[in-house]
Length: 200
Image (cartoon, rainbow, N blue to C red; front, side, top):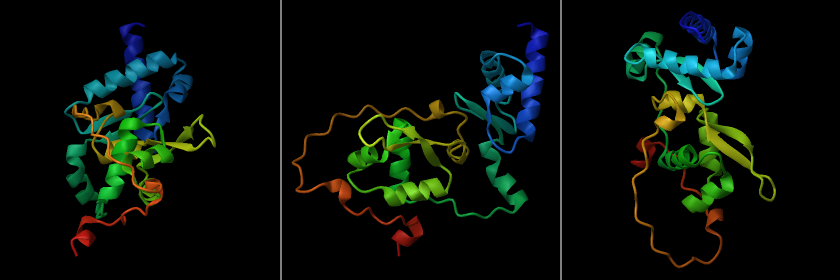
């Protein structure tokens, strides 16, 4: 690609992302621009690099991209728009969200095996907030749904792409604990309450 062609492709992509209300698939960008998808991904990364330190950001996954405001400007944008939404997430939902973010795609059964409790309530809360979504089905028996994070997740935590998550610390393996009688995954989950409600 020539430099002029690169700049023209970036111009087209930037314009489309600016007017789009939702994330745009890189395949759709390539189709509109009449270019290869690999060229589009390269151009999206270049635009994202140019936006560093400015008021806009380009959030992207391997398959889509979205233009958003800089996370550090969120308080001012919310004040200007008159947004006053309670964004607090319960401890149970945060635990579930962290597991999904680092292990995605992951099924509910695996999440519950890690947490040791039922996670239906936490998953419902996260899906209602648009932070996680069903991204496919596992190849195991019963083909359970698998969950992954969304663009709303990236926006909520000020990330540009899933790989921006901080690395997990190297922890020593946990000692083996004796099994409790019964299946702990069926134990009721702690209530999905906000921090204020927990302190009452």
